Length: 100
Image 1 (cartoon, rainbow, N blue to C red):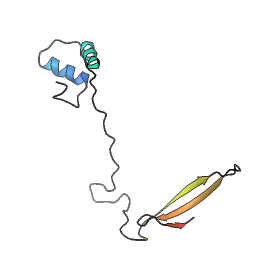
Image 2: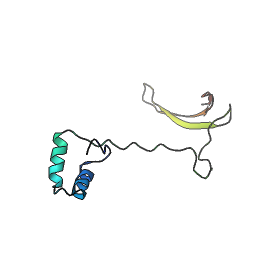
Image 3: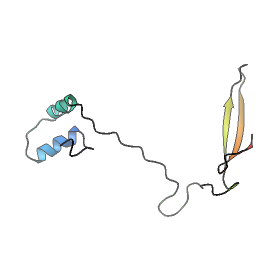
Image 4: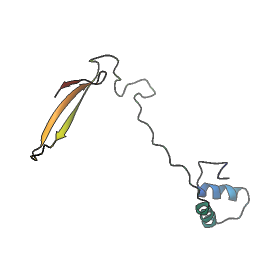
């Protein structure tokens, strides 16, 4: 059943066995599951979407030069131990640094 239902873990396999008329203990199924080295694959994280289903835009995708700019702070620490914080502005389409 583990090969037939690849995304199921031992708990759901136990429920399926009980539904099919087997009288099994969940601890026994778990012990066999571990002995065979079975694992349910980890769930993949959902990717962030750029647009909602209603057509509204969350953030713009750059279509041409100077269409979308991005800014961020960059923290630098030189050898003398002093800290420097820079505000960088880049063009997202060409990835060129516009200001620092």
